[in-house]
Image 1 (cartoon, one colour):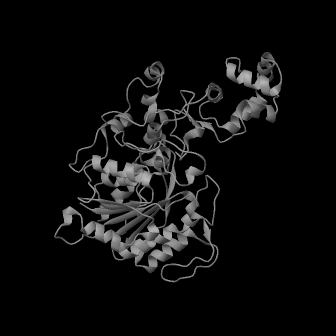
Image 2 (cartoon, one colour):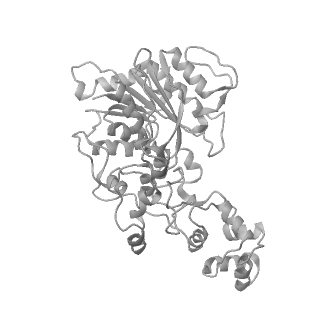
Image 3 (cartoon, helix red, strand yellow):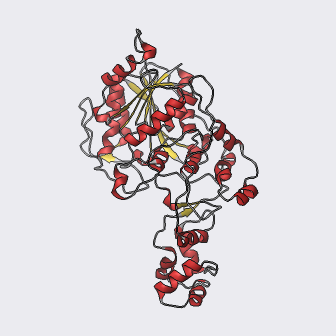
Length: 438
């Protein structure tokens, strides 16, 4: 069985894919204590026991050395009296907030430098193959005064892929041209583009990027993924009368335990739904499937919208606008509402979106407040987001369900664990290509 190391492992999306591809994860690491609880619990479910046949180390990668990794692996019970085996694959996704195009990009974010630490650990362990995963914004982030681990000083404005490939070349690794892969092409019911770097120790057989396993017209939809999790039983019976193959696979399990048998869910966890006020529910009902806040606002102003069955919104707008309830219904029922009036009805927020049931979900992010179910006036549960990422139902996310404010800078609650993860089926597709050339 090939051996792997998973750095920046998060809750374990990448690890799930590696295990599904037949790799044994000897060592993994992440900085978060919240992630540690989820990750270790999952590995115990699979028969990967701390100190016996695997090791998780909670650590900042800047404090993690190759000697640390070797020490923990050689001390595993399965290697008692034996030499540490070669590491076949090292995989990692350095923290991507500074690279992300979804939020404010920050070139001074210290997390941008973590890919350099990843290169350092690669140099100290010398795995046969390496994979680095990140957001698309990783491709064009520029650096000023970057100095590599062998002392190379890169010209100001050098972009991350150039630096990364040059650094790997300096330590004896050849690399493939980085490629953007869409998770939807590999059986994940989600449109999620990620940049993938694949490298190999000089002299070894080069791997290839995985070919899509799903044709564009056959991509899984949101309905395929989570139709069975609709909370209204009557709606569910109509919309999702029988489980789809994807739903069955999620429940029965794709990830094998150490004995080779998949872990089926005893019950579906992480299904708690966010509490929402009546006004919020009524606002959510105004969205059409696939519609964003920007388009809804434009529709309200240009076409008008019937809110006669929305008593809470009518009362709120009546008070805020200083007009009668009947006048509120008349105002929004025809074209001509001003931007300010539409924003009282809808709020100023434009990022909110109602997912379309007949398409893959949009990219799952760490804050689920802005995504609305196509079937019910609510946001999604952690389990629904996890299904969109291709996690098995037996995978339990532990710790706080969500957090807010400044705590988001340091806490990694369940929604964040899901949103930060590599989709297991995407990781599996990449890992299978490495396995082919080992």
